[in-house]
Image (spheres, helix red, strand yellow):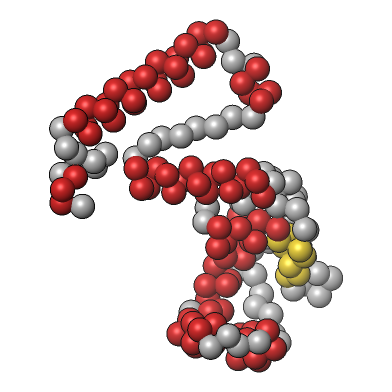
Length: 167
């Protein structure tokens, strides 16, 4: 959900003929499902003991070669691949939202965390498919949210109920 992890959506995990797993960069963003979570966990495990070293290297503007030598090579040194306890089900790579839509989603989540404002967005075809009563419901929800926000501000409180002066 964060911009920092967006690159994971481009990866597809596949089975190699020798039983190992191969990660392929698909160039387009895909849906983040089990394989995306698998790659995220693998990165966390591989970098767990290297985070401080990685931060130092980045602060010192290390080159890509230096980063690779210090971080990547030790993490990938093991040649023997672990065997899986049960058969892995290969997920089909399904193209997901594009970079622009991902950025909108990330900004929506950031706005929600900072202000409490719930922002929903839809594609044009979804809006066109809405009935008049659906549109009226959405407009009413927006009006209630706006009224509540104005009332909280008038009372000197933020969306979490804290005094504005305390912030």
